[in-house]
Image (cartoon, rainbow, N blue to C red; front, top):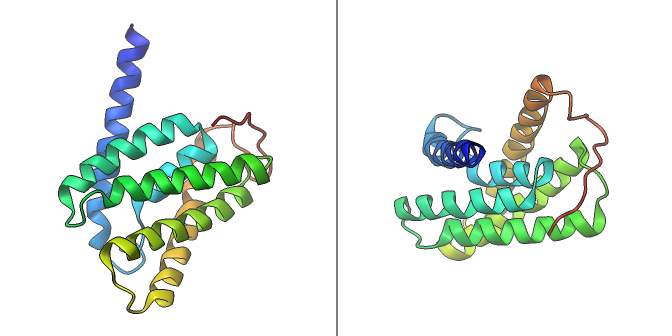
Length: 166
């Protein structure tokens, strides 16, 4: 019982933290290009488990949908990104390495960017904006991976074997 309460508390803190960090994106160039929700759920999906990432993504997406002007954008973008990157991860990648994280992070960034473009309808400077977001997300993924790697001996920078779940 206590472990469920602790898990629920951790889930709520992570979800609300993602929502709050997402609102801090207007600080300066580079940070404003990072979609914290997309980065967080892709990192959780690749490093931990798909079901946890889906739960955090749907919950945080729901909260962000309440704050945005495009209804259901964050929920749809998060779920589509998670489903597609998890399918790629299961069928084409065999480990949880930094390179897998970067490749699937790039694919997930492109998917979320395309969904945002379809919802918002802004095709102005499409490739420049996509390129800036890819660079920002790549830097954020590297910092996040090595930041987590400093605090745990479970992660390895090159090959991390994991069981697949879908």
